[in-house]
Image 1 (cartoon, rainbow, N blue to C red):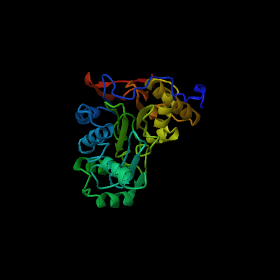
Image 2 (tube, rainbow, N blue to C red):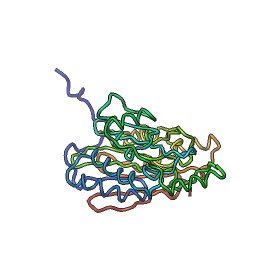
Image 3 (cartoon, rainbow, N blue to C red):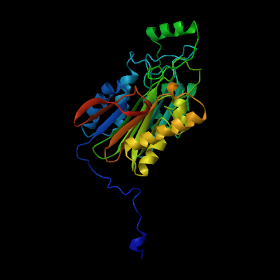
Image 4 (cartoon, rainbow, N blue to C red):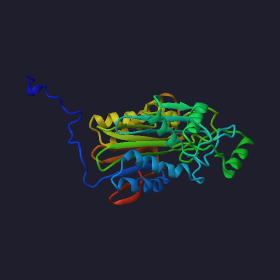
Length: 315
């Protein structure tokens, strides 16, 4: 007979709820465009819907908005004038789906979900991702809007590649949510850095970099310079720090400090870097931290939908 002393201990010395959480659900998303995205997610969450459905519905709002120039339709193209999209999604069962360098499809997040649910794979890229999307009934269309095309042609006169921090030519909408049943999911989608080399992929479609969800612990997502996030497997790191007992804000802060330390070793100016993380734990606590001022995120819970400004390293 097994001894009581051999009973399995919980991963964390925290009282994680297994049922409904008072005062929840909650959804977080990056940047100002997160407010509209949160509204769509909240309609599902407030009706006892699943977090997975909420995050997909939420980021689709931003993907379809031609005025948001760093995500989806209307996103700024690569240096060849091609709009290429990256996205990933992750649910409470650690199911994952991702697409990268996808062209001509309005909603890469929904293609990523189809990869997750209808294929034995977790990532499809380029022409393969497009062929799969078309086979699933997604419609092919031109995503390069007139304003984005005009800006690209103006850029071609000098062809200088100098991404600017906090200018949404390299930013993402990342969304993480906790539903009434205490389950987590996340989504991340972007058109990537403006005027990037064709074929460049950032952190957004990479599980563990741009997004990570562990339903026992919490969820995190990232925005900003994707190369720096990939360098530290940023979102996975944030979740693992929460596993060690750190609050969401402290976990985000430590991840940013990893980026700071590595950048200093590489003699890279921090003034040229912006990375922001947002995180939520299983108890519904949330937090954020970024490299420098300028990043903001949206929060929607029972108190309403609002913007929040995180603390930052570079004062």
